[in-house]
Image (cartoon, rainbow, N blue to C red):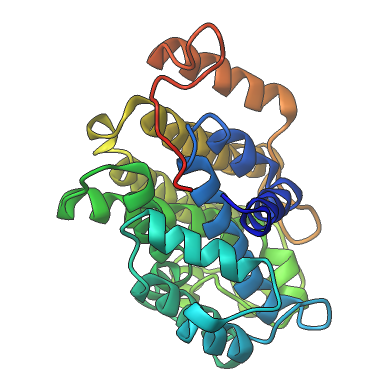
Length: 296
């Protein structure tokens, strides 16, 4: 492995460390090169997200990312391109989910308010279910259709958590992902939403979304027994840690307009201890239980 590629993979890991300590911790138990592949996927998706949500600080516009990704073999000027070429050389990852991911992020330019749960689920698939599609060939040596479908459910479940957690932040960007039909069902008005009112109706809206997310998490983990032990452990760890955001939001009466829900370190540690016992993983020496060579 040449120095440029080593530097590129290190830079991808630095991005996941900075952007999501939860995901970095969860997938750090994977053997190489699987964990490096997860870091590369995260880094590219983060670049897509930044291009839409933080254009002033972004290294690329969405159009520039899409153009360079389309001509990946000759793309240069940023560490992500040699890292992505390594990813596609090392794993049977398809390009289609990455294009769908960009399609979903592009929706944020034009569709800023959601009317139905069906619309929200479509968005969740494009921006997060696709990440499941990207990760499955990295985490599983021979995924079938059911395995891929479960990976998509897991990604969509995590996106519902994002929607619930980021209500206030999204409101500041002029976006409302909470479907109007759900608000109407529980008699929570747009006026109350715009003023950040926390009441019984809002709690009912959030509970329904939380229940939906937990159902999708269950669907996402139903095929985990077919994965290698390290992959199964890491997937469940990431899912459990992310789902715990829902518990924190509930504990604070779903005050997500002015407070960002998070998982305290002690809770993450408890989840990790529980899964170490459940999976008998990682081994006592802390190393992986699989030997996978990194392609040179």
